[in-house]
Structure formats: structure tokens, C-alpha cells
Image 1 (cartoon, rainbow, N blue to C red):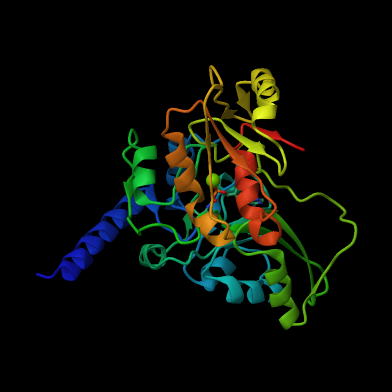
Image 2 (cartoon, protein in one colour):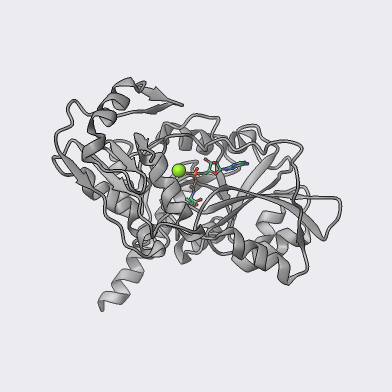
Amino acid sequence: MSLIVLKNIMSQIDLQSALSILKSDGVVGMPTETVYGLAGNIYSDEALKKIFSTKERPFFDPLIVHVAQIEQAKELVLNWTKAMDVLAKKFWPGPLTLVLEKNNRVSDLITSGLTTVGLRMPRHALALKLISEFGFPLAAPSANKFGKTSPTSAEHVRLEFKNEGVFVLDGGECEVGVESTVLYVHQTSDESEVSLEILRAGHIVLSEIIEALDEHNLKIKTGPKKEKVSAPGQMKHHYMPKKPLVFLDDGVDLHCSINQIQNLIKELPDLVESVNIIKPKKIESFRELVLSDKPDEAARMLYASLREVSKGSEDILFFKKKEIHRGEHWEAVLDRLGKAATIKIEK
Ligand code: TXA
Ligand code: MG
């Protein structure tokens, strides 16, 4: 038997195992193009609760629902409009989550009691196969403990949940590497106009979204907003590596800032918005997190690099923002690093 045939058989067996876990209200590690998710049936309260307990995630942080066809998304929202259709057809499958008004098929456990739900269709053959064969959408947050670094390989997920023994469908390394862009879409009474807000930066940037809508003569409503869009889960600290990370603004010198860093870390509480803050006992040695100068490559390698540099014996990690890290294509990487950082030293 050739290696390819054997691999195909093995992946069929894995898919069947994942399906049977989902059918019995369990959770599985699911590959996507962004990061691995911890997936469970949206119609099983038991599975949804298991997602939160496995991740040690507080219930105030809503989950994203993953679909395999646009029809599945339409079934979960109050009103599917032209703008939503344009965005879904342009960017799905892909790293864009649309936050839309939900209908009563969507459990409050998924949305943390909000009236909206985050929906996306992942661009990964195995994820699409899993959702299609299961027959129902899957709720899936990133497959990491709450507040910690997101996983971009099956091995990351296995290690993160080795005590819980989570089964992981191995779909290789994630090609995008950072979580989807989360876009709030509010339909105004005029179908040719929508109001938008990016709640989390990702691979898909605002100019691409505007261009897609523009091609269909859809306008974006600007001007003062009546109310702030609710964006729970956008905590100050998130994605944190095992070692404390210091984010240095462009032009800040590490060695001149040591005293400031030491004092700031000392003043930090142990817990911020349910996220544990790891503090070094001493600050004598440092390791720099160096990323590619290309934003897509930097994003793809970001979480694996954070895990790698955390393995060393140094007391703290640092990242230096540079002149090149400008423009919308760097927003996602800088956002994640800013939150992964224990402290930020501004110029
Ligand atoms: O790429 C991704 O989006 C990955 C993969 C697995 O699909 N998933 C992911 O899920 O990053 P998670 O749970 O780590 O992040 C979901 C975030 C929430 O923390 C919240 O910020 C936002 O999405 N979100 C979800 N539903 C929302 C809603 N109804 N309103 C506002 N924000 C929402
Ligand atoms: Mg996450």
C-alpha cells in the first residue's frame, strides 16, 4: 500500500473519530486557516459548556460559529441582506467573521447573551468536511487556555490540553496564523448602505472590505455612532506566552528602560480581566522576538515564534516595533503582540 493511500485511510479514520465525539456532545480540535479551534455542536448545551470549561474561559466571552455553506449562516440570523451576501461571497471561505443580529436558534451560551452572533466559513478542507458531514454548524474559539497563545499546529493543541485529552484533527500548520478579522455589520433601513466596525484586526483589512462593497454600489455609513458596539472578549491581555513579553515602541531603547520595566511589572496586579499575569522574579536576561519583515509571513509564524522564544532560559522576552511595521497589513500582528505583552513601553 502506498504512503498516500495509507495517509488517506488514516485521515478518514480521524474524521470519523471526530464526528463520533461531536455526536456525543464532546469537543474536538479543528484545523482552520487562521488558528486551530476547539469545536463543539452549536445545538448542544453540553458541548458548549465543555468548550468553556476545557478552555477555562469565562462565559462573558462569545464564541464564533463556523459554517460550511452560506445557507447555514442565513439560518442563524434575523435578516440576511445584500451587503452580508456580498461580503460572504467575496471573503468566504476565509478569515472574516461577520457579527450579525442573531435569531433565536442561536443559544445565549454562544453569544454571551448578546443580540448578535459571529459567523464565519473557514478556508480549510478538513474543517469544511467536518462541518458538512456533521450537518450542523460548529462553535469554536481558538484552542488554547483562556488568555494564552493561540495554536497554529495540531501539536500545539495536544500540548495545551494534554490533561484534558482533547482529540485533534491534524490539518497541518495554519496558513494565515492569526485569528480572523471580526467585522460588525449593521444594516441600516436603506439596503444600499451599511454601518461597519472592525472589532478585531485580522488578515482581511478594511480597505478590501470597502472595495468589495463598493464594487456592488453599497455605501458605508459614516458619521457619529449612536451607541458603542459591544465587543466583549477584546481584553487588554490575551495571547500571552509563558514568559513575560515587553513591547517596545519604535525608538525605545531596551537597556535605558530596564528600571522602568522593573517598576511597571512590580506594580501590576496578578490577575487582569480573568487573565493571569506572569511576573519574572528577576530581570537580568532578555530574548528578542524577531519576526519577518513581511506582514503575512510574520503573522503565519507569530504564535509558533512566541512559543519557541518562551522555551529559553531568559527572564523576559521583548519585541521592538520598527519603522516598517506601519499600515493596515501590520495591524493584526501588532494588535496580538500588544495584548500578548505584559507591558508596553511607549516613546
Ligand atoms: O480565526 C478565528 O476567528 C478563530 C478560528 C478558530 O476560527 N477563532 C477565534 O475565536 O479566534 P475566539 O473565541 O478565540 O475569539 C472570538 C472573539 C471573541 O473573543 C470576541 O472578541 C469576538 O470574537 N466575538 C465573537 N462573537 C461576537 C459578537 N457577537 N459580538 C462581538 N464580538 C464577538
Ligand atoms: Mg482566542
